[in-house]
Structures are given as structure tokens and as C-alpha cells.
Image (cartoon, rainbow over the protein chains, first blue to last red):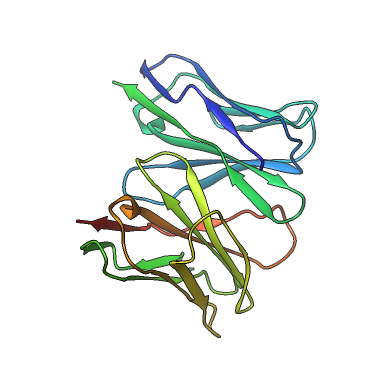
Length: 110
Length: 114
């Protein structure tokens, strides 16, 4: 059974600060996805990373895939209240099985 | 293009009853996934249907079952409800092949078991 651990589980910071959340596993992923979920809604796909060492940017969000494809990070620069939500990583093992991480609940304080 | 839709939005049942949850995928998507999300944290995989057949199921008891219809919509049934079944049930859809299994989620059905 593949497990994805996310850290921290909860994070509360002031608007304008930077933050990084992590997604780790002992297994190698074919690819990894990051989702954000807001209250009362389903998760929304933010990005998919495929190649070891890959870095993708989405405005103030920077996603990195570890060289060994076992871990990933999400860095947010100058956090804004609109970034508040539950961030979920999801690893693809083989071609079909997508396993979701434990989640990081982020709160940005205005 | 319409997204994934789920009904009902909220469902309240008592212990021992049965619950039926419904999902309509994005047009053109043939795969449907069901997840259970308790306490607003990570998603636990329940079931995967593709082209009308069950392809995989997660580590849940047999009282969790479902089906996929010819129009690719899907139904999740939970029998003999228990208090710990209270959760948000999410449905997701995707194209049946290719890509990296990127899934598109509906807003969920909040099931409360009293």
C-alpha cells in the first residue's frame, strides 16, 4: 500500500508571508498532482508534475518534484487570503492507481 | 462545459438505513471514481468504474457498492449505515485512458448518519 504523508497538517500564517508544504512517500511515483479544495467544494487540480526534478510555476505557487520522484513540495510566495484551503497531493503509481495524501489545511490571516 | 454534478447535496439518515448517492460525469468522460472524505482531510478511495464495469475498489466493506449506467453516470449505495459513515462523498471523472489520471471532482454529497 502506497502512503503519502503531507506536512504540516495545519498551517496558519499572516498575509504576505511565504510558506512551503511537503508531500513524501517511500514509493516512486509515475507522476504527482496537487489539488486545492475549498470549503463546500470538491478538490480542483492545480498542476501535474511528471519528470524528476521538474519545477512548475502557477502565478505565486511553485511546485517541485523530487529528483527520485518520491516527494514533492509546494511553495507559495506572498500568501493571500484567497490561498486558504486544503491542499492535497496525489501520486500516480503505475498507470491507474491515484493515491491521495493526508492533506495540509492552510489558513491565511488578513 | 458542465462539470461533475452530484446529488443530493446533503443527506441525513439514521443508523441501519441505506443511502444512495448519484454522480454525473463530465460529458465524454467514461471513468468515475468515488472517494470518502472524513473530517475535511485526505481522500480515501472507494470505487472506480469505467465503461460500466467496476475496475477497482478500496479497503471498504461490501456494504459499500455501486454501479455505472450506460450514460456513464454512477450511483454509490451504502447499506446498513453506521455512525462512522458520516462524511463527504466525492465523485470524480476523467477520460478513460491517457494522461496522468487527472481527475475532475464534483462538489460532493455530505452524508450524516444519526
